[in-house]
Every structure is written in C-alpha cells, then in structure tokens.
Amino acid sequence: MIEDLESAITRQVVSQLEEMGIKPRKIHRNLQVKKLIDLIVEKNEGVLTANGAISVRTGKYTGRSPDDRFIVDDEQTHDSVDWGKINHPFQENKFDKIFDKMKRHIEDKEIFIFDGFVGADLEYRLPIRIITDHAWQSLFVKQLFIRPSAAELESHKPEYTLIALNDFKATPEVDGTRTEVFILLNYTKKTVLIGATPYAGEIKKALFSVMNYILPPKGIFPMHCSANIGKNGNTALFFGLSGTGKTTLSADPNRMLIGDDEHGWSDKGIFNFEGGCYAKCINLNREAEPQIWDAIRSGAVLENVVIDKKAMPDFNDGIITENTRAAYPLDYIPGAVIPSLGGNPKVIIFLTADAFGVMPPIARLTKEGAMYHFMSGYTSKLAGTERGITEPRATFSECFGAPFMSRHASVYAKLLGEKITKYKTVVYLINTGWSGGPYGIGKRMNIHHTRRMVTAALTGELDTVRYRHDEIFNFDVPTTCPGVPPEVLNPRNTWSEKDAYDLSARKLAQMFVENFEKFGAVSEEIRDAGPQI
Image 1 (cartoon, rainbow, N blue to C red):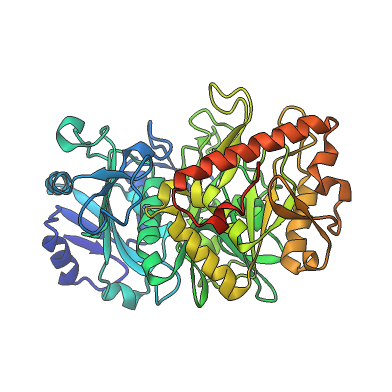
Image 2 (image 1 turned 120 degrees about the vertical axis):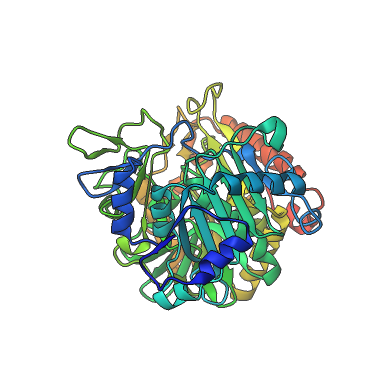
C-alpha cells in the first residue's frame, strides 16, 4: 500500500522497489510536511515545541560515527578511493548479505520514502531516493535536500538509493562491521546502507560523500564550504572547520546566502548540493544569529535540544550533547538564493582558528599556496575541549572535510588550482584565532576587525594595498587594511616576547611540514608553497 500525497500514485515506484527486493507492508512517499508532523507526534517519535518545530532525540548516537563508515572495495573503487584511516574498505559480499538482511527486516514494516535531488544545478543534480523507517527522518531529508516539482516526482527515477533503518543492528562478528552501527557506501551499485544510528547527520554526509566521489571525473569541484553572493553578483566561498567562524562570517546582511555547507563548482559557477540547512544551535541566541533563530519554526527539526517546561527549546542546555542541531529549508532564511546558484567566485576565504597565536589575521595565497593550505586544512583544538589536551593542538583535516572525501586530497586540490587559474580567483587565509600569545595568554581576534578584513577582501580593497612576505609561513600579508589597526596585521608585533613568538611560529610551521608528508608524491611547486623551516 502506498500513501503518496504529492503526485499521482504509479506502479513505477513499487516496481522500482521490487527490482531491489524491497517489499514493505506500507509505503509513505513524499508526504506533506504537516502529514509528517502529525505522524511523528502520533508515533511518539518527537514532540511539538511551542514554536512549531519538531524535537527529537537520537539516543546514544548524538553525532557521526566515522569509524563505522565503510566503502565497498571492488573493481571500480580499488584504485580510485584513498584508503586509510578515513576510508575503510568493506567486502562486497558482506555488503550484499547485510542488504539482504535489511530487506527482510522491513518486509512487515512501513517505510517512508523521499524522492528528490542533491544539487541545485539541473545539469549536474543527482536524483536520489531516501528510505527510512521513521517519519521524523523523512521530514529531516525533505527539509534538507531539494524537493521535486509534481511533474518531476511523477517521473522520478533515482540514480542513488539510501536506506537508513534505525531499528536494524548489525552483528559485527557475522557482518564484518566494527559495531552494531554501519554506514556502507557502494559506489558501483549506487546504494548507501545505514543502520542502528538515528543521528540524521549520517544521511546528509553520506550523500555528500557520494557527490565527492562522482563529481571530480566530470571536472566539477565538490566543496565543503558556505557560499554567498553580493548585490552586484559577486560570489564568495568560505572554507573552514568547526569553530573557525564559517557560519558567522558568511552570514552577511549585505549579501545573500547560496548555501551554508556543501557546494559544487562547475564551469557555469557555484551550485548548492542541498535545499536546506543543518545548523549547530548550542548557545544559539537571537541577537547573534537572528536568521537561524527565526528559521527554527514550524517544520524545522531539532535534534537533541533540551525542551523546557513551557515546551520551548533551551539552546543553552548541553546536557544531552554539545552537538545540538536544527534542520530547516533554505527558504526559511530571508533573502536566500533559490535556486541556490551563483557565478564563478572571484574570492575564496580559508578560515582557521590558530590557538598558537602566530598566524596573521589575514594573508593572500598564491595558487600553489591555496592548494597547499586546502590540502592541509589546518585549525587547532583548544586546551580543555577534550580530555588529555592541556595545550593547543594542531588539527589537520584535508580539504576542510577529510571524513567525506573518498578520493586522494590531490584530486580535489588539482580541481581547486584549475578553477583559480581559469577564473582568476583570489584566495585569502583568515585567522579567527588568537593574537598576542597562545590561547590562555593572548586574546581572540576582534570579530569586528575580522569582519572588516572579510569585507575588504570581497570588495577588492586589498587589491591595492602593500604586502610583506612572511618568511616562516611563506605567504603575503597586507601591511594595511581599511578599518583595522596596522599593528594587528603582524602577529609578531602583538607578542611581548618576540623570541617566544619565533619559537612558536617555527613549531607550527614544522607541524605543517610533517603533516604534509602523508600526501606522498605531490608536486614540488605545491610542497614549496607551504611554511618554511
């Protein structure tokens, strides 16, 4: 039985499922938001908050399980996937056996289907089908991915199918998984299997991983970045790991949001992979982030957010997890660009939060320097953020998204370099970390100064100022920036102990060099564009 409220019911859907051996008791396909909300409440999967959002709990899995993510190692992937600590190989026959078990598991159950797309560009979008065993996850994917029109839904033929069953657990000693949880990517069979973890971020990032694998051979650069566009049509990209300020700095009242997390760059320009946002909301407040605050309303999905006695979200309470999340459609953001497309960017911003306090607040990178820092993906963890960390610790996540990159980092860096050359894109590295000393001694970069530097980069004000060459980090640093005190631009001048600065700077440079060794045979031009010791 199929419940399909947004298109005519066709035998094609049932036939497509039967071809895969999927024969559930009942099918809900592309239900309207209100119907999904009603089912979520009826099934006690979540509660309706006073502001209309649906609040759910994901049990003990409040974040991704990267060590339980595997890629099927077969003839197609054996030489194209960058196997190692991130991309773990999985046997093809084991995948088939787990898939058979999952199909038997849902024979007597109801499932929820979302048919839609990843990718706002009609030429490069990926038709997807997401099958879940919970109504709330179907609402999540409906809000996060790109919805089809009625006509598109009627003729929808999924190229990739993702099946996420919260209630199905693997048996590691039999199934070949590490634990009961699994995220299995089969690029040859174009199927993704997720089991035992209700955390919806696994669905989002699994499909991001798919795009990161299938787009490079087409000459399209997949990116873990936010993107916005100015009133004059100038597109900008913001790359950065957690805590670097990517969301904050890309949210600009004078610019329009293209997307907050995942994009592709073709010869036509930038396109968002998603149709929604998945925002962190720990300590969210209306004054600092009004757009996100106002987007958490009817139809939004809250993950692991504490709800108070008045049925209102308490964003300051992290007792469940610090990784509280909100999912909502892109059109909940005022002025968002829909369809979420932009031209070829003239400016790219790499963000880092250097807790050693030695990197300048802004530097201009050459093409090779941009490729080097893109592959490095540097930021730092702070003392006290994790048990055992007593001083700032360098963190390197290649391509600013290592957990989702199936191919070698050089593949993505090569695409970046080609785009920079073709479109004369200027790349800046902005440090939102510390100045005047390391974390605990120095101070965090002034956000107003950082915003002014971002604006200067985007408007071309930095094209005409003088630069000095930083001999340790091997990039060019502006000596002036409109609206920023000159002394701020040279981090050495902000330290009272110059020798201590020199020592710390060389120490961080050494970390860059040692980290880069893992990439193996990389061109000397790229390697030589990094820090020098």
